[in-house]
Structures are given as C-alpha cells and as structure tokens.
Image (tube, rainbow, N blue to C red; front, side, top):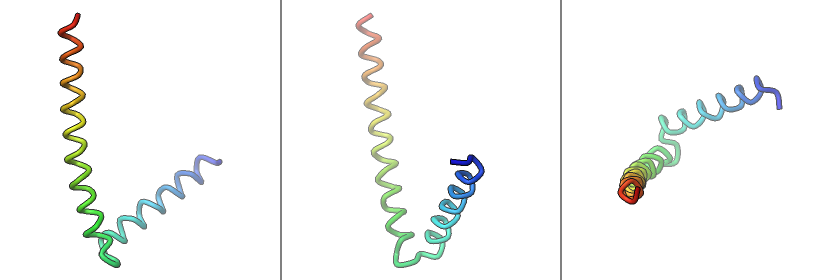
Length: 61
C-alpha cells in the first residue's frame, strides 16, 4: 500500500477515535477510560515481572 495512504488512513482513525472519546458517544469515553486504567495496571505488573526475571537471570551468571 502507498505510504501516504497508510498515514492518511491512520490519521483518520486516530482523529475519529479521539472525537468519539471526547464526545462520549454511547458511553464510549467512559468505557475506554476504564479499559485504559486496567491496561496501565497490567502493564505495570508485567514490567515488574520482567525486571524480576532479568534480576534472577543476572544472579545466575
């Protein structure tokens, strides 16, 4: 696909998602915020587990 077409489609999708979130259309803004909060928590847990595994593998060496 043409790189400019990909950029254009991506920009349209991002702007559309931000617009829907900002207008809180059908409660989508609230649902998106709740998923974002849950995703941030899981990301923190996974990063912590990654550091634990890296630390344990460094102890073995």
